Length: 310
Ligand SMILES: Cc1cc2nc3c(=O)[nH]c(=O)nc-3n(C[C@H](O)[C@H](O)[C@H](O)COP(=O)(O)OP(=O)(O)OC[C@H]3O[C@@H](n4cnc5c(N)ncnc54)[C@H](O)[C@@H]3O)c2cc1C
Image (cartoon, rainbow, N blue to C red; front, side, top):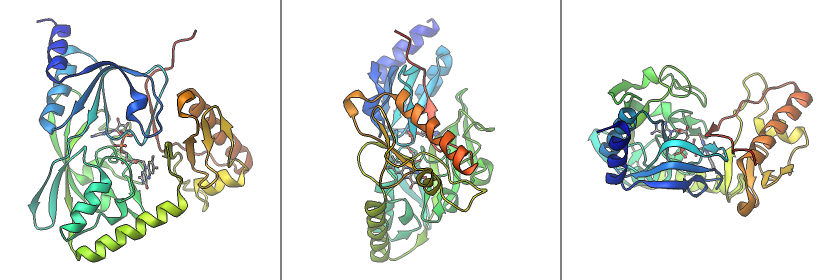
């Protein structure tokens, strides 16, 4: 069998779709097409797909909920995996092993209901736990590094590796998975240590966290928080953007939120293009640099290719 036949056979087995618009699979509803698109429902299929792509010599990109990624208008070459592996099992006292496609919101509520405390902060995060690993997702003073014990990953060459949390270099919205020594590794499952707690208290905390979000963050298609908070200024990225007078600034369908200046919204889904979001990101960066002398660093991942001209 040739490399291309290996890929074709596996893609058929995994019910892959050709030329799938990725705007259907991102929270901001923007993104060009994937050559091959596969929905993954368990870790075993994820591992098989990574190994097949490696054997066939095609590139592979994994998406969770697509809530922290901007995909350029030319789409993604090779195989895109939409990770919906969501299994979870208790593996010790307060300890769970969860597949990487599990959604934060569901996990926060199900663990709270089971009397396990420690994930309440994550209730309003719209992504998957594996997608939150490269940026060490967090909110309200907590983040993944507070609960993570270890991670199973698959390397781009198809090798399974189990890593203790320390090896990931988790830090504020960054880790070794983001362009560092573990770039290209895909998390298949995470082991978390939670505390024994009171279900009612945890669920009440989740309700509190969710109402805080409703009051302070816009709803609808968006890229969430675009920029990291700077370390050499006491102001948040949102405060700096607001102080530069950028609330409401719009390029095409991309608009800086009036409610939370670190959010860029998609206000015209039918016409939205990634190129407008990228132009707005650059405009915000240059205005804030001129106004406050601070270089804002994006928190989101930008992937894929520019659209062909013409
Ligand atoms: C409205 C809104 C609110 C948000 N609030 C928060 C918040 O409070 N705190 C916060 O930290 N983030 C927040 N985010 C960002 C985002 O939801 C989180 O970072 C989330 O965990 C990303 O998960 P995802 O599945 O959507 O990742 P995706 O967007 O699908 O992927 C993000 C990156 O991770 C990579 N990736 C995906 N899965 C894996 C995997 N299994 N292994 C390795 N790499 C992987 C992708 O290739 C991509 O580069 C918010 C976003 C939105 C839109």
